[in-house]
Image (cartoon, rainbow, N blue to C red; front, side):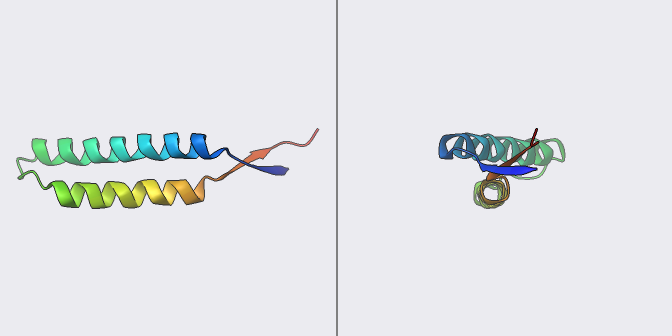
Length: 65
């Protein structure tokens, strides 16, 4: 197996989508649980998740043939 580094543009796009999905998921979860809207907490958790994805998924593993 061979590791290739993903382009920066792809990593930023993937991290942005992760941020939006986590943020909206937390917002909807608390909306249906009838809890108050807490923007700083949602943003902090979503930013942490997207940064973690940015660093964890920087390589693409390809098969060597």
